[in-house]
Image 1 (cartoon, rainbow, N blue to C red):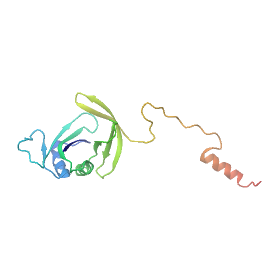
Image 2: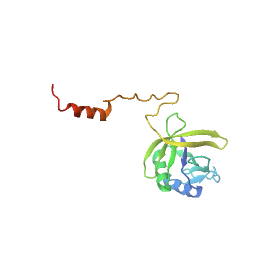
Image 3: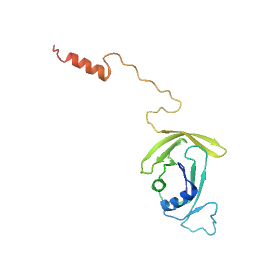
Image 4: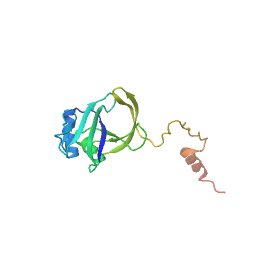
Length: 167
């Protein structure tokens, strides 16, 4: 069984991306425009690199990736080789959530607003994933204001004033 990978890169020209992909995958990478299925080596991966509007506009589609290759190490190698941030979808059902893979190997969840257009998905409004963020449709409840003597500074003052008194 083969897989399909879809990644995004923060910039990058196809002439720069194809050789980096080949090195990251450890395979021959054939651009989709010139790939001939009859002459395609069994160990080759067919890829398409194209530009989309919005953030992380360089899109990489890899077709026929063998199951023996792992996606996360491959995209981390690509980010390192290109010196650019790369995105891949995470395994949740949230269309706006991706994994940001930095050139230094850091991987973190991020969110984008996703709009479907005639040119494909457009990503905008990049933000880091925050666990404190309420789920869509839920209202965040603001914290209750504390009166005098509550909180750290008030409690510290009260303890200092009471320190000299003993019953």
